[in-house]
Structure formats: structure tokens, C-alpha cells
Image (cartoon, rainbow, N blue to C red; front, side, top):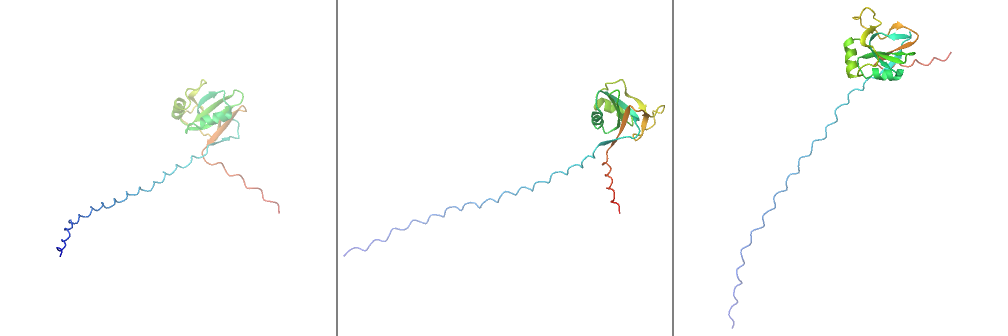
Length: 169
């Protein structure tokens, strides 16, 4: 007879379970929604010039610019918020940029236009002869003459076109 079989060797103790993986990290916070762009500033009102009915030189303190056309004169005026009118002299091919206050004229002369090319630079208040303290009115000429045109600067919208005439009934 045979000896009884030997008992199986004892099983090794079970190995501990592998460590659990760390819990998943929470997702990064969502970036805040993009901020809307800042509101655009309101558009600047259009600048346009109206030729006065009466030919002549505008009122006001002025800077003289020589050798430029009427349109270029208006463009120069548009560089300064204080410039309120332009005079274009037909026979001398010169333009004057007009201001209500001598201080505004001098500031614009130094900062916006450099020095004037002519002899006059903010030393006369045309249209208010003998009254340098009087405020110029850019809607009126200061000196009537056929050889110059005064253009008043306007900051508002141009007037609407007149309605078409009604058909006759």
C-alpha cells in the first residue's frame, strides 16, 4: 500500500490588491466667457461747410495759409475743433481759418498748423473792427467783397433734401 498523498502545500497568502488609481482630477474650470468689446464711441458728426450767400470775408480771429485751394483750406479748418469758418480769397489764392477766441486761434496756430505762412496770425478779429472783445458770428461775413467766399463750418447733419414737388392735380 502506498502512503497517503501529502496535502498540497499551503497557498501563499493572497497578495494585497494593487492600490486604486487616484480619483480623476476635476476638469479645470471653464474660462469665463469673453467679455464683449467696449462699446464704440458714437461716430463724430459729419463736418460740412456752407458757403454764405453774401460774398466776403468771414468774421473772427484768423490764421492765414497761402497757396492752397478752398477744399484744402476746409480740411485744415477741420483739424481744429475751434475753427469755425474759412475764407477763400479768389484773386490772392489764400485762405483764412477763423476762430471765435484769440486764445483758440493761437493754440491752433502753434499745435495744429505750425506758424502761418503769411504776415497775419491771430492778430486781427475781422468783422468786429474796433471791437476785439466781440464774439464773431460765422453765419455772417465781416467784410463784403466779390473776391472772397466765406464758408461756415457745421457739425450737424446736412439739412434734408426738400421733398419732391407734388404732381399737379
